Image (cartoon, rainbow, N blue to C red):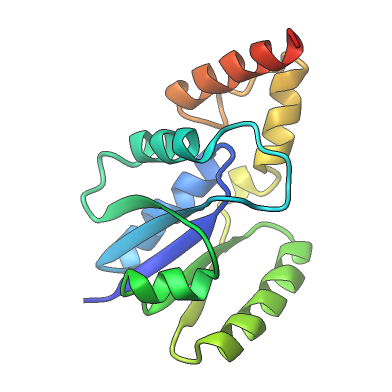
Length: 163
Protein backbone atom coordinates (compact mmCIF):
# COMPACT_ATOMS: atom_id res chain seq x y z
CA UNK A 1 0.00 0.00 0.00
CA UNK A 2 1.46 3.34 -1.07
CA UNK A 3 0.58 6.48 0.87
CA UNK A 4 1.14 9.90 -0.70
CA UNK A 5 1.41 13.17 1.19
CA UNK A 6 0.09 16.36 -0.44
CA UNK A 7 1.21 19.34 1.66
CA UNK A 8 0.16 22.96 1.39
CA UNK A 9 -1.22 26.01 3.09
CA UNK A 10 -4.65 25.67 1.46
CA UNK A 11 -5.82 29.17 2.43
CA UNK A 12 -8.35 28.29 1.13
CA UNK A 13 -8.34 25.01 -0.77
CA UNK A 14 -9.32 25.63 -4.39
CA UNK A 15 -10.70 23.44 -7.16
CA UNK A 16 -7.13 23.22 -8.44
CA UNK A 17 -5.96 21.75 -5.11
CA UNK A 18 -8.90 19.35 -5.07
CA UNK A 19 -8.09 18.28 -8.63
CA UNK A 20 -4.52 17.37 -7.62
CA UNK A 21 -5.72 15.51 -4.51
CA UNK A 22 -8.35 13.51 -6.44
CA UNK A 23 -5.96 12.66 -9.26
CA UNK A 24 -3.40 11.57 -6.66
CA UNK A 25 -6.02 9.37 -5.03
CA UNK A 26 -6.43 7.53 -8.32
CA UNK A 27 -2.67 6.84 -8.42
CA UNK A 28 -1.98 5.96 -4.78
CA UNK A 29 -3.76 3.82 -2.22
CA UNK A 30 -4.05 6.65 0.27
CA UNK A 31 -3.53 10.42 0.09
CA UNK A 32 -2.98 12.55 3.16
CA UNK A 33 -3.60 16.23 2.48
CA UNK A 34 -1.41 18.08 4.97
CA UNK A 35 -2.44 21.58 5.99
CA UNK A 36 0.65 23.45 7.17
CA UNK A 37 0.05 25.37 10.37
CA UNK A 38 2.22 28.48 10.12
CA UNK A 39 3.52 29.46 6.69
CA UNK A 40 5.40 32.72 6.20
CA UNK A 41 2.45 34.52 4.69
CA UNK A 42 -0.65 36.31 5.84
CA UNK A 43 -3.56 33.91 6.24
CA UNK A 44 -7.26 34.50 5.80
CA UNK A 45 -8.29 31.35 7.69
CA UNK A 46 -7.05 29.76 10.90
CA UNK A 47 -5.50 26.31 10.81
CA UNK A 48 -8.68 24.76 12.18
CA UNK A 49 -10.81 26.50 9.54
CA UNK A 50 -8.49 25.48 6.69
CA UNK A 51 -8.56 21.85 7.84
CA UNK A 52 -12.36 21.84 8.17
CA UNK A 53 -12.86 23.44 4.74
CA UNK A 54 -10.48 20.95 3.10
CA UNK A 55 -12.10 17.98 4.84
CA UNK A 56 -15.51 19.03 3.60
CA UNK A 57 -14.13 19.45 0.07
CA UNK A 58 -12.80 15.87 -0.14
CA UNK A 59 -15.29 14.07 2.10
CA UNK A 60 -16.63 11.86 -0.70
CA UNK A 61 -13.22 10.25 -1.31
CA UNK A 62 -12.55 7.34 1.03
CA UNK A 63 -8.81 7.27 0.40
CA UNK A 64 -8.18 10.99 1.02
CA UNK A 65 -7.75 12.35 4.52
CA UNK A 66 -6.87 15.85 5.72
CA UNK A 67 -4.53 16.47 8.64
CA UNK A 68 -2.93 19.56 10.15
CA UNK A 69 0.83 19.53 10.54
CA UNK A 70 3.74 21.62 11.71
CA UNK A 71 7.48 21.36 11.34
CA UNK A 72 9.34 19.80 8.46
CA UNK A 73 7.20 18.35 5.70
CA UNK A 74 9.46 15.30 5.38
CA UNK A 75 9.05 14.53 9.08
CA UNK A 76 5.27 14.64 8.89
CA UNK A 77 5.34 12.56 5.70
CA UNK A 78 7.38 9.96 7.59
CA UNK A 79 4.93 10.09 10.52
CA UNK A 80 1.95 9.35 8.28
CA UNK A 81 3.80 6.58 6.46
CA UNK A 82 4.03 8.38 3.12
CA UNK A 83 6.52 7.17 0.53
CA UNK A 84 5.60 9.91 -1.96
CA UNK A 85 5.30 13.67 -1.74
CA UNK A 86 2.78 15.10 -4.26
CA UNK A 87 2.96 18.60 -5.66
CA UNK A 88 1.05 20.39 -8.40
CA UNK A 89 2.78 22.42 -11.10
CA UNK A 90 0.98 25.33 -12.76
CA UNK A 91 3.64 27.45 -14.43
CA UNK A 92 7.39 27.35 -15.04
CA UNK A 93 8.06 29.33 -11.84
CA UNK A 94 6.44 26.52 -9.87
CA UNK A 95 8.93 24.07 -11.35
CA UNK A 96 11.94 26.07 -10.17
CA UNK A 97 10.58 26.35 -6.64
CA UNK A 98 9.46 22.72 -6.47
CA UNK A 99 12.78 21.50 -7.88
CA UNK A 100 14.69 23.33 -5.12
CA UNK A 101 12.32 21.96 -2.48
CA UNK A 102 12.63 18.44 -3.91
CA UNK A 103 16.42 18.60 -3.70
CA UNK A 104 16.28 19.80 -0.08
CA UNK A 105 13.73 17.14 0.82
CA UNK A 106 15.89 14.51 -0.88
CA UNK A 107 18.75 15.53 1.43
CA UNK A 108 16.48 15.41 4.48
CA UNK A 109 14.84 12.08 3.54
CA UNK A 110 16.35 10.18 0.60
CA UNK A 111 13.55 7.58 0.73
CA UNK A 112 10.74 10.09 0.10
CA UNK A 113 9.96 10.35 -3.62
CA UNK A 114 8.43 13.44 -5.14
CA UNK A 115 5.74 13.27 -7.81
CA UNK A 116 4.62 16.43 -9.58
CA UNK A 117 1.30 16.51 -11.38
CA UNK A 118 0.66 19.06 -14.07
CA UNK A 119 -2.30 21.21 -13.15
CA UNK A 120 -5.35 20.78 -15.32
CA UNK A 121 -5.42 23.59 -17.92
CA UNK A 122 -8.55 25.17 -16.47
CA UNK A 123 -6.72 25.74 -13.15
CA UNK A 124 -3.28 26.82 -14.40
CA UNK A 125 -3.81 30.46 -13.43
CA UNK A 126 -5.53 29.73 -10.13
CA UNK A 127 -3.91 30.32 -6.77
CA UNK A 128 -5.36 30.94 -3.33
CA UNK A 129 -3.76 34.40 -3.33
CA UNK A 130 -5.43 35.42 -6.59
CA UNK A 131 -8.71 33.91 -5.43
CA UNK A 132 -8.63 35.95 -2.20
CA UNK A 133 -7.86 39.13 -4.12
CA UNK A 134 -10.78 38.58 -6.52
CA UNK A 135 -13.10 37.86 -3.58
CA UNK A 136 -11.86 40.95 -1.73
CA UNK A 137 -12.85 43.02 -4.75
CA UNK A 138 -16.28 41.32 -4.90
CA UNK A 139 -15.48 39.28 -8.01
CA UNK A 140 -17.14 35.98 -8.83
CA UNK A 141 -15.14 33.03 -7.42
CA UNK A 142 -17.83 30.37 -7.80
CA UNK A 143 -15.99 28.55 -10.61
CA UNK A 144 -12.83 28.20 -8.53
CA UNK A 145 -13.97 26.74 -5.20
CA UNK A 146 -16.72 24.50 -3.85
CA UNK A 147 -19.84 26.33 -2.62
CA UNK A 148 -18.99 25.90 1.09
CA UNK A 149 -15.59 27.51 0.55
CA UNK A 150 -17.06 30.37 -1.49
CA UNK A 151 -19.44 31.06 1.39
CA UNK A 152 -16.59 30.99 3.94
CA UNK A 153 -14.39 33.26 1.81
CA UNK A 154 -17.24 35.74 1.35
CA UNK A 155 -17.87 35.79 5.12
CA UNK A 156 -14.19 36.34 5.93
CA UNK A 157 -13.88 39.01 3.25
CA UNK A 158 -16.88 40.89 4.71
CA UNK A 159 -15.33 40.66 8.19
CA UNK A 160 -12.00 42.00 6.92
CA UNK A 161 -13.64 44.81 4.97
CA UNK A 162 -15.55 45.91 8.06
CA UNK A 163 -12.40 46.33 10.17
